[in-house]
Length: 307
Image (cartoon, rainbow, N blue to C red):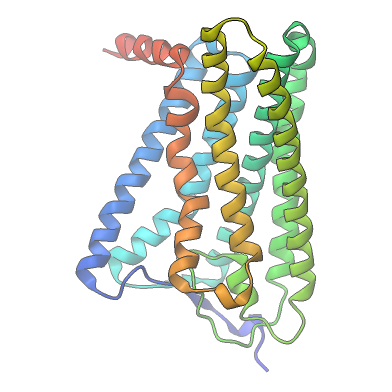
């Protein structure tokens, strides 16, 4: 029975079989990718260059922008290249690298989103303790923990997945290398260990989501007690977009990795994957930063200085 050593490449799912539509998909995703690069690149430049934005909230936004850039650069360029050159192949080593980097970045991103909820909770519910609870050392430690957790999670899942014997061909029903699609190619019950690791990881993510929800329950309780309508509006404008993105990110990822086999369709799998791997990195700059007056002022100042 052939195992993983006999697989030299995988075949990814094409968006369409028609050449003209493949070029259309290339142009569409190129526009999305450039928008993500521009938005996140501007966030990085503005936060790095403006001393007024050297605060815990914007420090975590800087980490989020870095992760978003890496996350979307792991999946979209290869998909665009395949559409442009009318191919679906990815090497075995390239697939393993894509799985490792994607799991690393997306895990770290979710933990950074969780930390951002804690930041909002302290800022609104315990403003007098904000400086002591979220000092520079504490922020650096939390960010390092998020990145480190992502790295070890990626090592665990990549090692588990690519140690499995593969005997169901090499065709993946996804536009990038995704662990559930690789598990479908494995032999007998060898994949159960990786399934268990995936379930454990998703339960940890669900625990983080519960933490976010509990934090926002307390945040909204505090906001509703504010006497100023302007203060309530400002608090809601910074909290609701974050909660919406966390919900979309987690719900689509859980659906992609834990959905029952009888509702697994290639088109549905692709849409769900786009929702959790492409949409958040593209929209996060608009949702989190471009609506902020401080970021707009810093961006205008940076552009003026450049001109």
